[in-house]
Length: 357
Image (cartoon, rainbow, N blue to C red):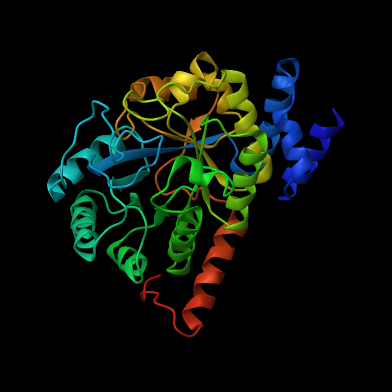
């Protein structure tokens, strides 16, 4: 296909497709699926080889969120049967993180439900990080705490956070259809605030919420515009007790096309296979490893993943290798660009970067 030849050429050189080309990827037929995966695989291997980064979620605070995100089991008014609890103590967070790193995870993602943290909450997270660091100095820490206020990103960076996750989830045009208590702009602002404080920006999407192909392409390009380092691609888990509980629109083949489109739009960025992969990709999960270079190990926030041993076996059986602790995930040019932008912001007037940013 001329389309795939063009996409591979652009991806190998770090260039994105046009919107029309990205839409064309989503419109390919099932007969063309293996060709699409193979093309995306060439781009993936150019920038990340055959390495798979393992990430592990630690849910610091679960449920009782005041936001009304339609997809979320922790949303305001949800009747989903999930565990709800207040903040884990530092040693509990450290125990949970240790379970992930023992399985091979090199990044621990500390997540808390809610609109956004108070300054006291940020200090709770800092205490959890200190406890985790006592056991493992080298593990990467990503925080996912909601919308950030001024100065909070810098404090998290000072406490040892490497990256901050806040997903855009869907396109700006339809964002109001899935949430009314905050806006797409609020989310984009938090991603920018994290980057401005010297944190690695992690932001992704949720597919399967009834969005159009154009919406998927729009959010992928919005993430590229924000210059994020990591793009988690989630597939909707239709929790009972939420407005989207009956929304089942995905097939394994469509999931693979979505992943390939994101890889082409963000060729040299960490693309992570995230929530919902087990129930939507099913037996085609190994094919996704040819497109993504990162997965979550084990369980998610309020849903179970497949056993960690099964993840490790899948990676090995598909001919890939787990990224070792201490390895640099991103290509050198992205690491250098991040370091340069941090130095530039530190020299600029009015920045709130901590000394070790």
